[in-house]
Amino acid sequence: MRTFIVEADGGSRGNPGPAGYGAVVLDEATGEPLAEAAEYIGVATNNVAEYKGLVAGLKAAKELDPEARVHVRMDSKLVVEQMSGRWKIKHPDMKPLAAEAGRILPPGRVTYEWIPRERNKHADRLANEAMDAGRQGRQWEASASTAALDAGAARSAASAAAVVPSGPPGDAAAGAAKARAALAGAGAGARTGADDGAGAADAVRRAAQTELSLPGTATPAAPAGHEPEEVPLSSESSSSVGWGASADLGAPATFVLLRHGETALTPDKRFSGSGGTDPELSAIGRRQADAIATALAARGTIQDIVSSPLRRCRETAQAVADRLGLDVRIEEGLRETHFGAWEGLTFGEVQERYPDDLTAWLASPDVEPTGGGESFATVGQRVAAARDTLLDRYRGRTVLVVTHVTPVKELVRLALGAPQESLFRMELSAASVSVVAYYADGNASVRLFNDTSHLR
Image (cartoon, rainbow, N blue to C red; front, top):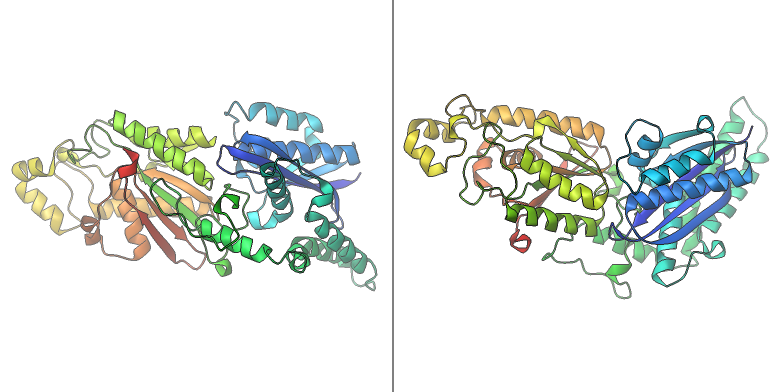
């Protein structure tokens, strides 16, 4: 029985926005491309485009050999986990696509594997070609595909591997690996002579992905001849990594830290922690959540969403999740500080009622608020543990982390290596965004976007 590798991807420039998918069927032994599929599908989300890419890849494999086994490789954790049966499919747009994918071949003959984005370049490129074609008012054509260059490179590599003198057992597998390596790496070099602008376009793409495209923030300047709107900003279809990273260290785990929108307690700056009334978002807070959801959808790089268990964060996170077609995962360690007897009070009211306790609290991170609240030292340990859990879970991915003032400040403080006294020197507005990218060498990079006047 033959075995095919199907690599599929999809992207949306806007999420939802102009979208397309790409898929390639590879020979398992040689890595040679046997079939390609790509299509511009109009306005859709990243996840819908990814599912359509999967469907197209499976159909192409079935057309080549209805009896073959298929191993699917995608850089969409959502699609891989849902099709493997480990995650539930909740979004109404994806349920019928998942069902369609499941009917193409018997489930026992299809397996799924998540791969990093950089290992899915062939399908990624096809998806971007389809979106480029759609922008020009046409559909993708196989004859115009730059991926055809990769096919030739793979065939050459496979032929070279076939004439290598026989050696010890395992050489055949090594030859196949060389063919696959040629397929993965030959595209850029093969295009250099034919397209002198490819490197510049990639540079524009990387530059565009280093800033947050929120309303009211500056858009990075593009080199002459390259319009910013041509740069793909989908969450999983760009060759650069999230919000900007060092190529030498690989893709960082990037936390987009979002403080929840306003509640009724926010304007008066009342203590509102995990031991209070668990307030909902106010009308302003809901507008802020909708505005940030729109901005992040336009940005198109969020791949996962986690939230504090408290209501104001869950409501903010859900507003974004609904726009992006993602699920919200709750992380208990992201909850706000328990402020004990100070919950619901203003700073002035605490100063009036508990002056000695407040003075001691301000002087030491080890002091708890009156009535058995949490010290900042305790919160810092809890947040650091949650950070480590998330880093293990989301390596190389861009994650929206919806939480509160203290956890955001702690994550920024820890990334900067600042003392805990620095918590009192940070101002954090409701619905504001900060970004921390965590690299493989243990270092972190911090970006702050604290102006939320545009969200009112």
